[in-house]
Image 1: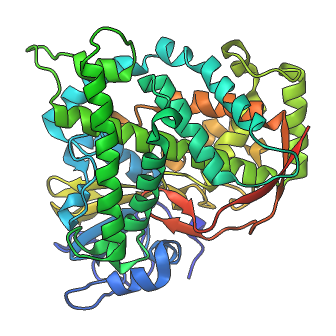
Image 2: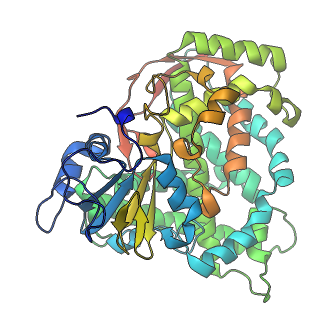
Length: 464
């Protein structure tokens, strides 16, 4: 088999089922009647399965859970799907396989409803509004460090999940989740959601009504989560005009015809942002410190920048542009461990990708975790090397060889918020604490909604 960097986009040099111009799916692994490639996916897991898909080229067809899929493995085709022909693709709805999550929220809505919601919500994420959150982000990070004792063993992923949730809830909803027990409801729902969606489990492809243990936990935790959110919305409606945050915008924003969002839309926006906004950022922090704990030279260079720019103080908004190496550490961590590790789109019509016909209704997958370590675009791709992110490197890197926040019209609306949080929290904690890694340096990863470690990332705290 030729190496992947010998192939050009769309070049298929392995035996496949079809060739350009055929009416079926693009070439890919043979499957079984009815179940297609589902058994192969479950047995191998997503990493090994995608390794196999890559041997068929950059446009690969297969069938899982009674649906036709097409994976694209070249940045040009990712850009085609997300940007150039975005109108020909729609967000894939997981409720089609019996899995429902905030269907009226921005993440899962579509068409005119999505465009209307995006317009109404966008003012909450203006650069000037996002910038106003920096000080509170640093304060919450400092409070987290103060809660640790020297020599204490902690589960870093759980600590950062709590921290990111507190920052998000306070910044966007003026909500103290600790005071009302909301944090427990959110983190429990997040764990149940990842368990329910873990693609290595056959239960991920079963409808929610099937009484599996994971389904029961998911339904129970989501019911508690919705009750928490509904209670918050009800309290806010009793105090109109007293707040100026995302929830206030959700409740008050009107479109050109004077319509506001429905109660169901507001609730599902809250659920979407509380889950997606805290889960992805907490994982990015977890993986960044996991890598730093194993690379002393990177940590020393990071410490030197923090001493030069910050001198032990928490970063302010004015400092962030000078934290250049900090940003490369974050970028490199998200390259190796993209929290949102794969994107899904559904073809709304027959389309052509790389010379292959992709039929209407096909689910197109865009795997960040695979493209981010493609040796055609990254030298020594498995190595943690923040220094690779020079201006020259970024100029020659294809636009969608790196896309941790997606792209096109549906790119992550919270991207600026997330990057501000990462660039504020990481230096605040790194200047106050060293971590000794106690768990597996190369953890097994659960491919659920986000790229979760199967086991807690355990660290020993050493106060500076």
